[in-house]
Structure formats: C-alpha cells, structure tokens
Image (cartoon, rainbow, N blue to C red; front, side, top):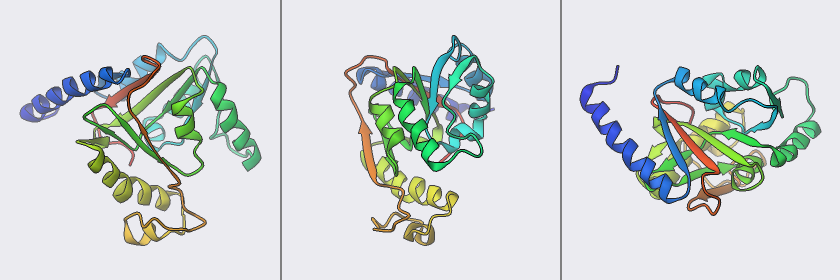
Amino acid sequence: MMEKNLETLLRIKETQLIKAFEANNMTCLFVKDKEELMHYLRGVLNLQKKVAVGGSVTLNQLGVIDFIRESDVDFIDRYEEGISRDEMMNRFREGFFADLLITSTNALTMDGCLYNVDGTGNRVAAMIFGPKEVIVIAGLNKICQDEEEAIAHIRGCSAPANAMRLNKKTPCVKTGQCNDCHSTDRICSSYVKLAYQGQVNRIKVIIIEENLGY
C-alpha cells in the first residue's frame, strides 16, 4: 500500500495529467495494478479485432503479449518464435492496418505529451497514423515534468537500457548515456513528440501505479 502523503501527491498528479491529455485530445486513465489493467483490456480485446503491438519491455513485464494471444482477436504477433526478419517487417507493415495498436512510451509529460525514440520507426509511425485506436501503457517512472526532463530520461535511461537489452555495440552501452553515435547498431534514429491530436480520443494513455520498463 502506498504511503498516505505519496498517495495524495499521486492523486494530484493524476488529475493534472487527465486534464492535460484531454486538452490534447487524448484520454488518460490510471489503474492500480496488472489486475485492473487486464480487466480493462478484457473489454477491448474481442470481436476478432486486428491487433498489433509495439516493441515494449513494459508489455512483456505485464504479460500483455500472452494475454492478447489468448483473446478473441486477430493478433499480428511480432514476437512469434521462428519468424524471419522479412516476415517480421511484413508484420510491422501489416500493423498499420490494425484496428488497435497496444504499445508503451519512453516518456510522458505533465502537459499531456508522449515522447519516444525508435530505431526501425514502425512503433512511432503507427502511433502517429494507421491503426484506428492506440492504447499506450506506461508506469509511473515514465512521467516527466516537461520536455527537457523527458528527453533527458530517453537519452540517459531508455536508449542505453534498450541497447543493453538488445546486446547492441553502441557507445551508450559503456557510458550509460546517448552519445548521438553513428554506430551501425544505433537504435535511436527517430525522436517523436505526440502533442495535440486532430483525431479525438484515438490515443488512450493508461498509467499503471508501478515502475515498469525503461
């Protein structure tokens, strides 16, 4: 159970974030844990919807990938074992025609914006356009005060941690900080900020009251 004063601070932040995302034509919902998240997703993952996912440590930590596989959906499974690189790229492209994209975000800010960096770019591209609906799942550790803090988080945490996870031979693996390298293994090619959206409520942000992912 969260300490009382920290709980109060979180509820203040929750109210501010909900209003900020609504002002940017996105919705924002807080859930306490995995159980609440799965209850929400159970009402969404049905009717043979075509569902794609972005690469995400958060989704794997929560068991969302297996949950989608067990649901009544047409899953474009980028994580299926044994598929070739060409087949994976085909599935990335197929994801643009999905009914729903489920992904995470590298950072989000108190003014209701999402910040991400991508290597291949399929995740951020699909967040911007393609799938009819986007659900973004993130932990409390992704909340940043402003753009400066969000970029610092990406360069000092998201990028090097993911490079380590993927066994990349980039300078950040040794320094723990993005070096704007020209390595062939570089995974931070496209920096994207999602702010005010023209399509109302296409993007739904779900914040879990835990620390998850990078």
